[in-house]
Length: 158
Image (cartoon, rainbow, N blue to C red; front, side):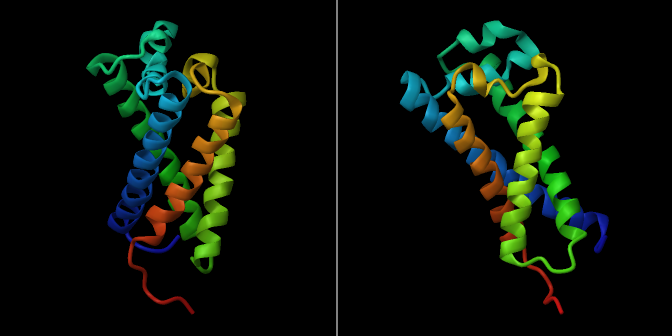
């Protein structure tokens, strides 16, 4: 791996922040399209803390929406750290590499979220959104990771 811990942290923060903002925006939009409640998908994420009752709430609240947004952001930062580690191990960090790695990490996130972790630790979006919407969220995760990575200045590569 190349670079310092500070550089790794900044790369992770950039990728994670863009991914968190983008996936949150996508969830809000998709929730509004499906239920006329942009908050329902984010509230559903808080099922990790509050149980399945969280997914029934459709109103904006500190308890459900705030917790859901915080949990989603934490998850995006964790995936961004994995993404950053993978990108730093690549010989060149071109935009096609960034996009492909975003897709790979997003696919790993989907498999982990729905086939590896216990049901209580799933993202919760599935409680309020359909499969097409989940695809949009994970595609947005991929794009957000790549966009966050690409926005950071990099020294010229060989």
